[in-house]
Length: 326
Image 1 (tube, rainbow, N blue to C red):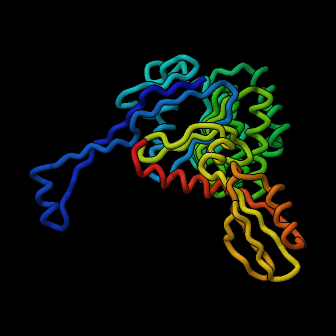
Image 2 (image 1 turned 135 degrees about the horizontal axis):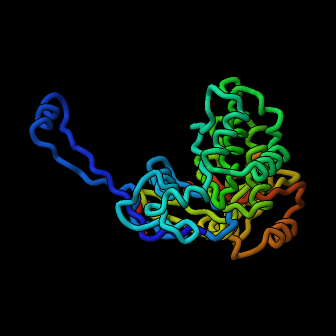
């Protein structure tokens, strides 16, 4: 569905020295510097995938999304949507994509929500039958029907997000780009948005590209994760596989009946306090069941718990490792 080939985006900036002298010097002699915001990205997204596309601030992810949606033109390389180069066939391709950029609404502030939808229906030349069917589907998922007569300017942030999601799906796009869609949302609104993504993917087979700093979005929605930093690829693969490779360990939390601290040759003690001992062990060395069995043979156990590496830890490690060229 989406193919990104050898994608580059360069920006030219003017370097200026410090203070007044630097400003005056720049008036007569400009020193230019080339910045590579995106530096040779290659990846493919299959139809129906939900892909988390993430990176730290300044990593180039938003620039990449803007090239993938036709807002920016690549310096070199290409983006193909359903086999068509979006830079060359932008008008045709945008009919197959829907886009939401954070809190930048595409709804008309001065109109009722339904009037905004009608305006988009005419822009995308959607026939009334398809329009009504899509609106009914969106109502079943998001409960949008109760908001149709409400002016956009009177809506809460969560209600506007529902309106934007519906607006992005009115023309039944094959691909949906969501750039920080949950920013500023409360728990209930985040739940509604995640439910929408799952259901629209299941019902229509919509391919979803999701950029987010909310790690809950990734855990709830994405089986595949693409991580970029400094404009280059850091990771691309199944989320669970990335977790196992970057953090191939678990932590076993054991509560004993007294302050005895049994040791194990294949587990490192991270902490021991108030009869609770935390053991770190490699998944490849042994299972949690084996470690529990060995420890219980050494000393009576009152309670146990297992801690997996958190997705935030995984991403932090991946970001840090990207300081070296891949």
